[in-house]
Length: 130
Image (cartoon, rainbow, N blue to C red; front, side, top):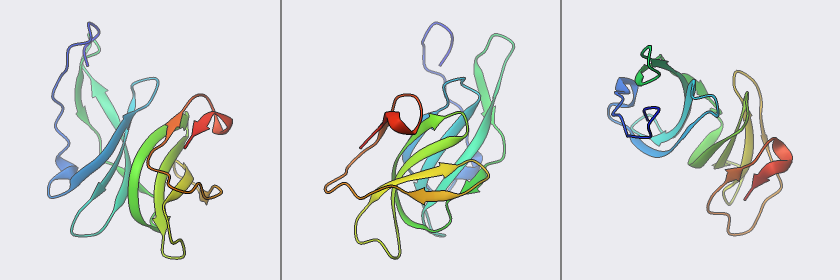
C-alpha cells in the first residue's frame, strides 16, 4: 500500500502457476512471506519488497524457499524480524500445527493445538496466537 493507505498491485512473477494460501508483509514493509501450493507441492517463501522513492511498493526480489519439510501450508505471520509463524503439517504430523520458521534457518514445531485454523502474532514467540 502507499503511504496514504491506497492499495497498489505488485507483480510476483515467481508465483506464476501457484495458488497463494496466505501472505504477510513484515512490520518494516521490507519483506513479504507467502505460503502457496502448486505443481511442485506446498511452499513457504520470503522475498524482499523493492519500493519507489515515495515508498510505494514496486516489485519483489527473488524468493528464498523455507521449511521444505512442510507437506501442507496455511496461515503465515511474522513473529519477529527473522522468524515466521506458519500453520502447516509435516509427513509425521496428523494435523496442522504452528511451526516457527527462521529465515535462512531451522523450522521447529510447537505443541499441537486441536482444531487450529489460523495464526496471528504480537511481538515474539510468546505473542503467537493459534
